[in-house]
Image 1: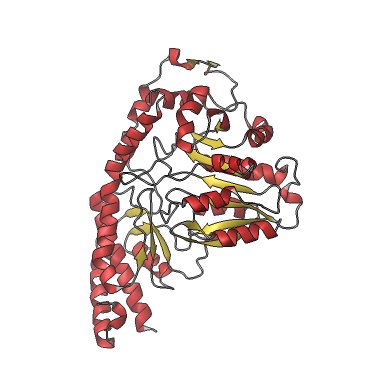
Image 2: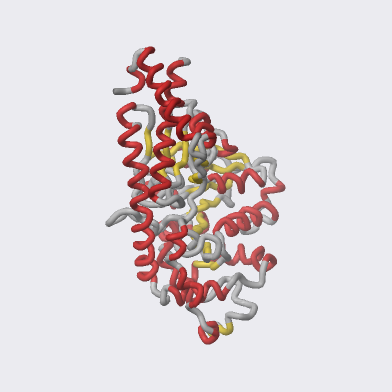
Amino acid sequence: MNLREYGKEELNAFYEACKSTYADYQSQNLKLDMSRGKPSPAQLDLSAGLLNCLNNEDLQGEAGDYRNYGLLDGIPEAKRLFAPMLGVKPEELFMFGNASLQAMYLTINYAYTHGLLGNTPWKDLEKVKFLCPVPGYDRHFRITEFFGIEMINIPTDENGPDMDMVEKLVSEDDSVKGIWCVPQYSNPSGVVYSDEVVRRFAALKPAAKDFRIFWDNAYCIHHLCDNPKVILPILEEAKKNHNENIVYIFASTAKVTYAGAGVSMLAASQENLKDLTRTLGAFTISFDKINQMRHVKFFDGKFENVLAHMEKQRALLEPKFKTVLDTLNAEIKPLGIGEWTEPKGGYFVSFNAPEGCAKRIVQLCKEAGVVLTGAGAAFPYGKDPEDKNIRIAPSYPSVEELQKAMDLFVLCVKMAAAEKLLHA
């Protein structure tokens, strides 16, 4: 029965029973962490071969000696390997270091200090704004907040961002300089952008000449189902509109191989890449070519081997997502006190509690030994206007630990919802 239909006495009894069970959890001294989408040790073990797959001869590559300086944009072998992942040509790919966030930060920094393609540096403008589909990725928002850029919430649904709103803001306001996007298995909702949404992005007519779509395709091969929906390649769609300068595409192998020692990349038009090379050439002589070659050797230079590796990742992740969803469906759905996504890939489940309850749920979990991402983290400035969204990250704990954490989580949802109803 829906918790909202309980009588006062019934609701009080429900709440007291929850409190008693909660006290039992507190006595167990749990220390479980679901705060970030970290790969588990078992996932990282899948890439152990990276550590011994190279020999000295392998570093004499087709573009020279990879132990030495040079090749700012990366080795050609790595470009060929990873270009299919983003639906681009090898020559449209720039290989970075171990984290795509570095590439995003450096791109924003270049726009801020020097300007894109000869446009006015953002630091010299009275106002700079960024569109932020919500719920979204907290580290994106941290970058724009760091530079003092005003962030505007954009609602999303099962197809992606509200494109009517995006098109209106972008076309009418030249202080809108960009938008953050996670188009495949969005963080945290798991939404996959529809073909219509991708085409509308590619056809945007911004008032600002230096408007850019920051297309963070972090989870493009992180499938948890057979026959997954794959988004349209946005750079190709943009070319159809003679609009190829509008987008930067980012990705990495942080959740493919080693989270702290993968390779990252940026794909863009030739004009954009040439422009960005101005700042990158001042920043570094080259990124880690040995690590790039290590990845090439580990996957034998074949993208199909990357996909086969991701099936091994899926085998480890799928039971964890099932644990989360089964627990929510069994414990929360009958009470009608929450809604959540059931993603077909990616790393997160987005949970919406009753309005005004998210912070309380996170607090209750923490006080009983389970750490979650902070309530509001999936919104700019950490402010969820309805205080209801919580990001669940199932990847790191074992299935047994995860089940215990989810049992506590649903208990805390019940307590917070009952408290709200009792004080209504």
